[in-house]
Length: 101
Image (spheres, rainbow, N blue to C red):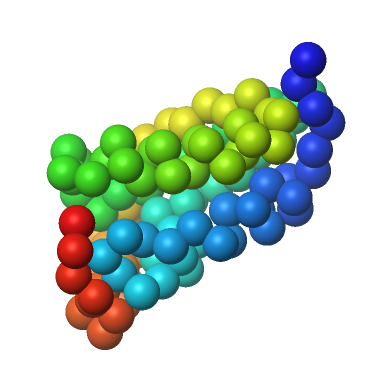
C-alpha cells in the first residue's frame, strides 16, 4: 500500500540528490522541474538539458530510488529544458564542473 506523503517531504528528499559531475543538486540545476504528490503517488518531471543525454537513466534512478524507499509509488516523466533554463544550467555547469560521469 502506498504511503501518504506530502510534496514537501518528497522535495526535501530530492533536495539532497547531487548531479554526478556538477557540484549542485538536481533541484538547483533545474533538472527536477516539477513534483506532484497525489493519493500516495509522486509524479516527478525531469527536464534534461538535451534529449538523450548519456546519464539519463542514472539521473532517473537517482530520483526514483529514494522516493520509493519512502514507500511511495513514483512516476517519472522526462522533457527537455527551455532555452532560458538551459542557459542557466550551462552557466552553473561551467562554474561547478567536477568531472566524472
